[in-house]
Length: 599
Image 1 (cartoon, rainbow, N blue to C red):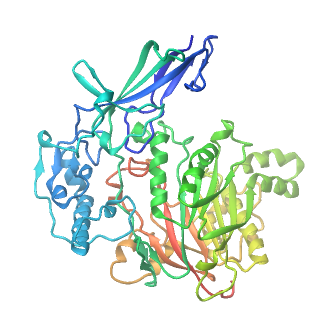
Image 2: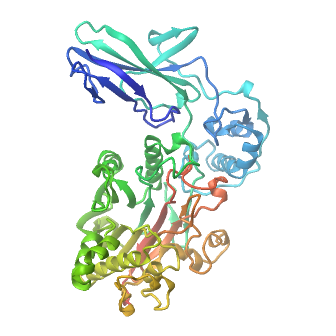
Image 3: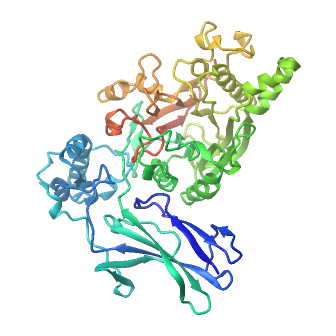
């Protein structure tokens, strides 16, 4: 007979908006085991599984808005007065509230600004990634309340017919499928998952019910919103709070941290519930969608996550996706977990013209066949073959969104998305991969007069040889990175050039003057004008991610503000419960301009 051997949840801390998917191990009548579901419409040997989720409604507590796994002991009454969403008003300790005050007061300022401007509360202002700036207000902390008087919104109302009383406790049924997504009404409650075998004919349960209890449901942590900052004064805020100008478009580049790399050993400073993929994928999706970019370039996207999650979810938001999985000559794990590069674009803004796939393994094979003696080719390939790829997409702007200064002209755009090899001891391989990509882009540029964007995680810090090649069009022959070249693949040094007029988008902050821009310039490296960091872990802090553009055909209009240490809420590293990758997202708005001569 069908029986349940074991049930467990990937994390015992449920988060609002993040689907709970339990692991259920079954023993079939033939004594084999399986994790396949057995539903009522497809019973096995006359039996199926019935699932239920219940919430313990008479034991509810408020949770800290900063440390959601902790019970709240303080409530900011200023938030209550300002009608700020109540979940954001709770804190676990006075120190927690004090440390968070610099960010917390922004909620007060924006609430006051919304009331002053519109005469009522605009809850959208408290969204995760709204781009509007904060207003000014004299609103301050008026008092704090003890945990004895805490409330967390109205108690959810569940039908009395599906309540369960056990040992003096009351449980309300909230779900009858294998999965369940907690809602805001569940915050502070314990959930119970039940799984039982049912006779398909009599509909009676067989054997005992397997039950799991979770910790209390917590709200999804939300980071401080990042605003778009105009860099040349030509952008303006549209009705949705985005900075736009005629003919402009936005591009996002983001290494989302593949689940296959997100091990608890590597990120042991990160709470296990926030490291789980069911939580991170929802948090990442909310962040990505919230930026409302016209073009999205993602790195470290697992092939199964692209097919099963990102492609269908972003399709709901009007995006069309293209994907290039890394080659697997080096990778020895599950083929479905190989990561790659994914490029999405809004269907109402662009149409797909052409796709080019760059496999650096194939380029390595061609290089060794042409340059390396036969006896040394195996050694050379062992060094060069690292499975990295690039995805190049040619898009055409929809007619209604063509630049106003070029009416009637077909507007094409070439977008390259790549993830360069990570190993720091392979400086020659990094530079060779970047040079190979640029040579391919030069061929495209020679065949068409087309603006270009080069986005991705280049695993190269500002001032390194790959960065110099991208930003300067050449590498100084005396650059220290060139000392690492055991295969002489970087000879002659004079070949390390390209003719694309590439400029780093975020260096525009350094060229912008005016009141209010000093804080953004302080977040740049004064030597290279690149962000101080785009990747933050316990072992490394620095910039590895870039958006480059051809400056003869594109102009930067605005940039997503950079994070500083305060923005990370004193977290020592990423990822964190608020930010679900160890990289930060880069977002730039561009406008096409009339072409000038190439360098």
